[in-house]
Image 1: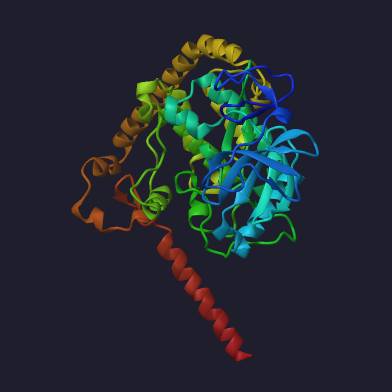
Image 2: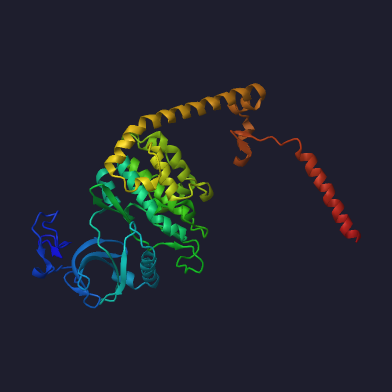
Length: 428
């Protein structure tokens, strides 16, 4: 292994220069890790002297991430160590350990590899993971606002591949958001890694539950209605909603549901519909062909929603004119995806406009025909004063439904039969 004397990143033996600082790399045997005035772990060896900590990578609500040298394996690893106050909470520690168990049981090239769960010398706990060089999707969106279609399709396709095995095993990630989508740059495009399985919902038989019924787990902006309500009947379709929210943000530069506070966000998720992405992302040229895809992905009822992340990825790719499925696009070079999308989009938009025009003409024709046959159409145009007094479920297009003629005779017949049955039972 080699290191940079300026930033103390660790690199493989065949690396020559640090891509961040431009410094010539030196063997770790000729260098010493730095010390940090506010963190005694930096420069120390942890977990029985196996891991030598070289630098702080990131901070989170649960813990701090370090880059370390595995002295036994001779490789760079990431150590995610719980904050001291978090390490005192039994449920948090149990969730942390479950993140290790779940991730270790789901080996996949698009899920971060978790290597070990260790207790540290300062009475905390460490998750040992593969070290990734890249950036979170959140960082990309803060800088670039949106993703180009080809990058979005490739990323989404790999996310779908990474989640399929978890969903088949009835494991729900439950905290999918841009912060937990990590992008490793390659010559052909991003290589995606899904992070943080610490909030999973394991619906497999006999799985231990760590969440009290009615508890809300996850990030509000990306949370499905059933997750917002803390419903017990929560499955992989909650992840479909979360991934759709990520897609929406990637193309429009904003989240689909927004409010000043967490509770207000959840109310918006449960009670309103997002603006169509072609409207919300008009400044970025989001095609109208994406609107019906997002509409299906954001259905409030899980039963009406797109049933899998794979199908969501397929529909998004098809909205950009791509042929095939997410399995074809996941590893296709980003430049090739871009060329295919550019070539296909004019025909896609033309078909969408024709379909919209045809649907509008059909609705107009049906309305005109209805006006000739029935006075109800006139009532729709000018509803009676009493119409607003009806319950919403009794209103069709602003007009209270009239009671069908068969209702009164049917109710009367049922009452006669019920009375006869009661009389027969009494006589016995």
